[in-house]
Image 1 (spheres, rainbow, N blue to C red):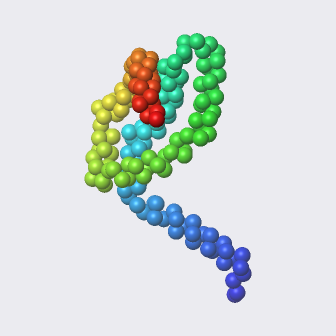
Image 2 (cartoon, one colour):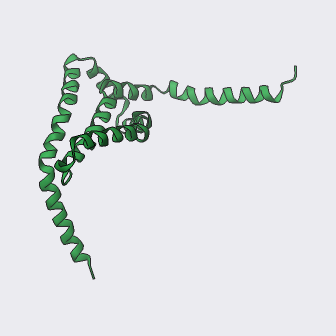
Image 3 (spheres, rainbow, N blue to C red):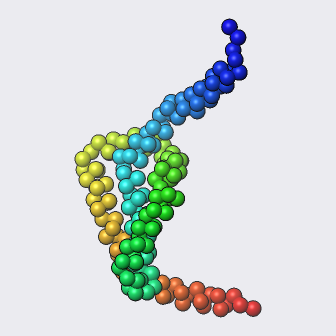
Length: 163
């Protein structure tokens, strides 16, 4: 039986797909990285920090208190739509996998996965997530003074740069 060009193309596509999927499935470190990312709740921390970071920046910007609450809410909603489209977990997850893969050895990943089985560790992870909004609020307290002093410092620096 003679192979048709369409059958050859189909076989080639299947071979390419299987060839690209098998190394990922066969790489135990990559799966451990994914498991560590899941058990340490990196996705939740990423989204919370991303969204609260914007809200903190908005609330601590100069003249933030003059923005009506309704407009702030609309700005937050617009931010969420844009952030979910441009800076979503689906888009950054592969970068986190690469980052974790570079920084953790297989033994270190195993250690973290062992920790993940401990309820005390999970409690600490949960508390960290609970405290993140409060930690960002601390930064809001210092933002007006920091912004004013930074603006002064930059202004002085720019004046020294003029010919």
